[in-house]
Length: 403
Image (cartoon, rainbow, N blue to C red; front, top):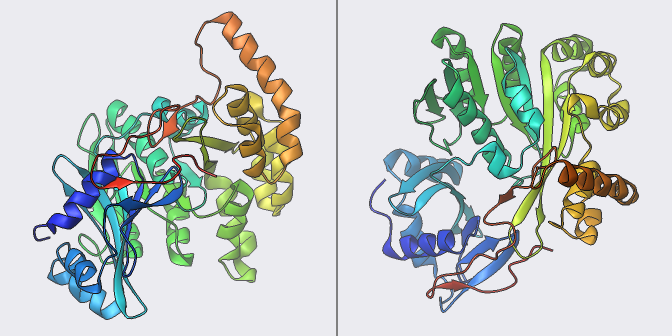
């Protein structure tokens, strides 16, 4: 990468200082940030011209990435700027012009406790082998949660962690563990090439950025079956959808076999969403499915619709529905009831769970002042009740609360 364009560097600094998660650059619109889930345009910044967007995009690309952009009309990459931050980027063409979308990736990996991650995250990362899925919509914080889990293993276990990412987002340094991070396109030709070579690289833990197709899913399951702990993401809304997505990729004549493989390899599924927090920022709500024998039987038999009932009754094993956690967040005063109900497919269940959540929080506060609930109350994108303050120039304007 050559020296980033000064205008782009100023916009990226303003984006980070404002606590925004993304920066969007496109022709005939001012630079636009996403803060607390809402797009806001920068103040005192003129509408971007095609030449300005081209200049900013080209300043980030080396010859190989430029050739990929010219051939595919889009390119993924990541980069870091000293004293500002690290960024995941996608440059693409639209209506004959270049555009650029950038996601802020903090230099420091936040802890599971800071994120308010469920205790089940710690349980799952201590499994000796198998596959753990972290699922949710785009922009729900999956990469951040996975980075925190990998960092915990890195802190505590003398193992070899191998990641295959497109592109590398969070940079992990060697601690107690050894960490090797392979970026698709730079260090390895494809996800599948990286997965196939993983067995020859003696990993204990494998992080796959995303299971994208039949081959990557099959190789991931094989790694999990052969004594490796595999972490991966999927863009689905909940655990049942994630397992259905994996099985449905395969031809019908192979699905019985894949259901058996998945039932044997699965350790758990964490599903998450980011909800607008009272006072600004966003807080994560989690669904947790832990693969006990009853869950494994449902996977083998293809009865995904029954999993939600198992999750709802599995609190003793660390399981919880998203509605249970949304109710907890309302009881803790972190989100409004309206926000919780809007974020749920079962809003009446949120209301039903709220009385239970309030009683549990009262019991916790009685036992120990300040004791956290089972899922924590951490936030993404800043302090839980303080809106990020934008720098003087340029300044993102608009509501800092999500809708």
